[in-house]
Image (cartoon, rainbow, N blue to C red; front, side, top):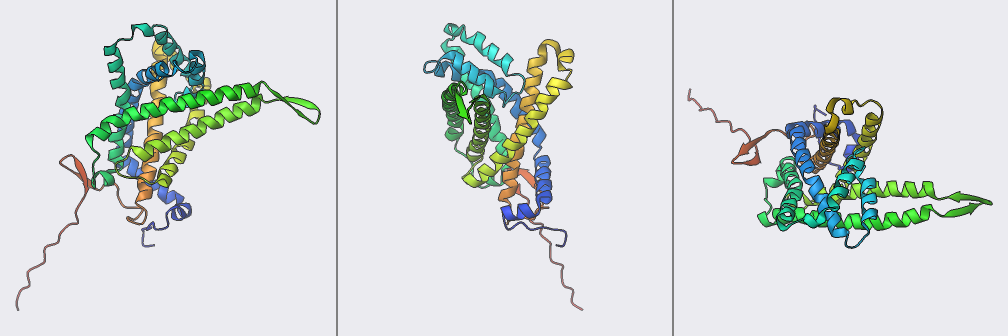
Amino acid sequence: MRGRLWLRGGAAVVARHPAAFLRAVLKGFRANQGLLLAGAVAYYALLSLIPLLILVLIALSHVIDEARLLATLREYLEFVVPGQSGALVEELRAFLAHRDALGGLLLATMLFFSALAFTVLENAMSVIFFHRVAVRRRHFLVSATMPYLFILFLAVGLLVVTVVAGRLQVLAGRHISVFGEFLTLDALSATLLYLMGVLGEILMLTAIYLVMPVGRLSLRHALIGGVAAGLLWELTRHVLVWYYATLSQIQTVYGSLTTAIATLLSVEIAAVVLLLGAQVISEYERIGHEPIDAKPGAMQLDQGRRHPRPPRRVKPRAVQAH
């Protein structure tokens, strides 16, 4: 194929040449300084996590019992910060016990910090989807309001998950008769709760990929990135749980900072996975337009925007008369 593989068949081409596509994703991620972007996203996500959860819990505690909310949150925070959800929930419980001290200035400050992670994530997405930013830019008001719409979306999602989890817990206490033997539904309930968490994780990632990049992204492409990032994070999350439980000496090294360091490490890895999913979509969008070995980093900055490098012009040689 003359050293180049031209992508034309979408998913069929990726299925035929998965290694080449994976190399293109990793090259693009490196060219876009993916680890640096993930570090920025992780820092602001950690800064935004507690204020965001406090706001969501204060709002939902008027609808659902606070203890049920905290129990559900502890269960599903394991999908984000494995091994550290208990410590985070205890911090939230302590704050909610003094919610009467929440004033207008503190509320405004928490609103501001809770939106920072989404703003930084949008900027990171604009670097990965540079071909979209070069064509059009998002209006300032849209970028300003989008984080708060995501916060509302998260609150509604937590509400739905809490209600469904309560129903499944009721189901777990029941028995069924199979060939004269009574069996509990504990295992079925636990499996359904886990699958619901994974499904919610993939849907959340798909929503981020659908909305964060500039321009209109197809649902199919967003779902491809959501499934890829979701499955990769599930594998990584189980490795982290095993590492913290067996090999980690983080408590010995960091002492009282253990929770903060472990949470930051988990969020950093989650940010890398999130941006890798975005890079998968970005490379998939290039199918049929560029060869798979085209350098995604062959771009230059021009007044703060990324543009493709124009083709080099060759001056014609002067024809000498003989």
